Every structure is written in C-alpha cells, then in structure tokens.
Amino acid sequence: MAQEGVAIKACSILSEAQSLAVAQPDRPSGYDWLRPEAVPMFEMPAMVLAKPEGRSLCFISSGTTWTAEIKEGKSLISDNDALDLDTLQPATWFEFSDYWNYAYNGIYSPQSVWDPASEQEWIYAIMHVENKNRHNAETGERFENTILARRQYRFPEEYEGLVNGRYIFPFWTYFGFVTASVSPVEQRFRTGFMQNQLGPVIWPSMGYLDPSGRALQHAHPHPTTIVHDGYLYVYYIEDAYTDPAMCMLEPGRERGVKVARCPLSKLMKPGFFRTYYMGKFSEPSLPTRFSKENRRFLFEKGGRSSVIHPDLSCDHVRHDETGESGFSSRIVRFSVARLRGTRYFLSVEQRWEEGNVGGIALRVSTDLLNWSTKTRVPGVDGWKLRYPVFANSDYTRNYEIDAHEFYVAGGGFSTTSIVKLAVEISESQKQRIPGPT
Image 1 (tube, rainbow, N blue to C red):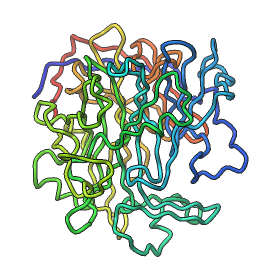
Image 2 (cartoon, helix red, strand yellow; image 1 turned 180 degrees about the vertical axis):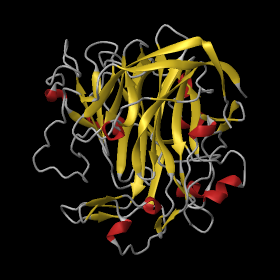
Image 3 (spheres, rainbow, N blue to C red; image 1 turned 90 degrees about the vertical axis):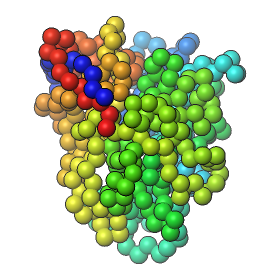
C-alpha cells in the first residue's frame, strides 16, 4: 500500500562530526575481552534512559553492556566527567552456554515500560546476540559457533578477529539473534538482566538451518525500538542468506529491514511479537510452541514478514566457506525517533557498500510503516557514525527529538561520535511514500 506523505525538504549539518566529551572508561586491570565482564566499549552509540526518579542511565554496549549513572547537571556532550564511574558495572555478559547467548550479548535498545502484572516499572532491553567463531589474537584462545554441526575449522580466516593485522569477519560461521531481557528500574544491574533473560523474541523468516543442518542464513539484526500507541515496535535486519535464491521460493522471506511489534502489556512473555506482513501485524514471529531451551527450532521458520520499503532491501550474494564472493550492499542499522510536537517520525539508516561503511540517510513517516524516499546527509564520514541512532539536543533521550536541533550518534570503539542536524519537513512538497513490499 502507498500513502500520501511528506518529503524532507531540508537537512542542515549544524556541526561537524565530533566525539562525545565522555570517552571510554579505563580498562579494568587483568581484563580479558572474551570473558564475562568484558571491557566497557562504545562499539554502539551511547543509549540514555531516564529513570522515573533520580539519575539517568547510560548504556555502553559492545559484546557486553555496562551501565553508569549520569551525574546531575552534567551532559554527555560537554562534560568529560558526566558518568559517575562509581556506578559503572556490567549489565550483561556472554556465557558460552545457551545457543542464543554464546559469544556476544549486547543491549542495543532499552526502554522503560510498566508491567501491570507486577505493578512495577521495568527496563525492557532488546538485545543483539551472536553465536560465532571467534578468536583472541592476544591469548590465542578460540571459540567455535554451536549452531553448525561440530567440525574442524582449520584456517584463521574462519574466525572473527585480527589475522595478520587485518580484521576478519567470516559470515559463514556467524549467527545473530534478537532477544530480550528485563530488570526492575530500581534494581542494581549486576545480575538483573542476566537473571531475567527472556530469550529470542523475533525469529528470522527462513530460520537458521535446513533439514540437513546446512546454514540457511546468517542474520545480523542490529535491532532498534520505539514505543507508540501501546506497542513496542522493533526494527531489525534479515540480510545474509547462504543461498539468496532460497528466500524467493515463498513470499515474506525476503532480505531487508523489517518490523515486528508487541503490546506493552504482553512484553514479559516472548511469544506475543507479530511481524508486519502484507499490511498487517498478523504473523507470530517465533515458531509454533517455541521454547528457547530446544535447539530443534533452529530448523524452523519464523513468521513471514515484509521489507518496509523497496530500497531497504539487502543485496547479498553468496556467503559460505568459499569466502565473501560478490558482497555488494547491506543495510546495517535502521533507527527511529519521534519528532516532538508533530505527527512525524524520522529514521536514520546506514548501508555498507562493497565492504565499506557508507554514509547516513534520513526518511520520514507518519505511521512507522510507510517511509519516504531517503535524504542523504552530506559531508558525514560513515566510519565516525557506525550503527547510528538519534539523540535529542542535550543527549538525554534517544527516541524523541526536535526537528530544529538534534543529533545522529554513531559508535566507535573509544567513544560515541555525534553530528548535529536540523530538518524541515514540507507538507507542500508531497510525494508518494511506497508501502512495504
């Protein structure tokens, strides 16, 4: 379906990309990044969540997530001592145990939600989780994925990590999951999120393995969320299929940016997410009678789902043991925020093209489903704004911004980078906003 919408008339860069004043906290002594309490690292841009009372929380995420409170009267943008390091502590880690929490367990999109059953405010965290081959160049330790049947990996190029000074990411030994974890707002987080892991909440439409145990796809979901009209919307990516032709055998299995949602009242039970398909949120995301403890579901498909815009598809060729042949283009993140005081939502996206990090682009929507064509943000170095999200003018919110002044923030490894923007949305310059495919 297409709807009448509006175009972004103007996009102004108010400042050059810069780093947040707050840099990466110091590495604790004796720290091993492959062990449960991995070093705090801004691989992803900083996420901030205001608590109902007291200080806001900053989430510092990579393979694990740390939280720290933001000092009263301090700003992440201008104060290098904004984080209270006495409150810095790990919120998640990976356990090398469950297939869906094995070698990466990062909080990518936290939201504060009210649970009517417990009559309590919770932090509901949508996670990006990975199960993959990985090695530590410093210690020589190697870890194999537990999705594929056990086999002998003979070459360094079959593991993620540094090989002769070059970073290697072998898609054919990588599997990603969208999971959820919760913790009471007022609870200390050292164990809260790890004690309340709900497991996967969104399942790829093709599943993970075919009946013979061969990999069907290698999801790299990079999920983001927004709350609207009583629902939590989750945007995620289905991208790298072992055989791209397989996703064309049945409608609703295509690669690209997709969306699912769940009523806020049912978030504590993972089976209530529905994927958006053919104009409706009608498809259960998880396989029928799904159980996170049962590995047999790796062989089953998730709900059918639509790519939310024709040019938000992922153009992949084959990824397998022969290497990355014909890598062309893939969306790496799609994030959304509400434009305060208007009926509009803004999205920011980043695409990797021919193995290089691309720039960023914006779109506008009135319903979170039908999006305008993109407006590229000129003059922005994509390497400084990886995995972009929004932030308001003082970086106290990620999900609601003002059109006249806001930030796009991206991850590095030592800090979060930001660029200040302003947009003008013109109702007089109407265009057709293509609906989901």
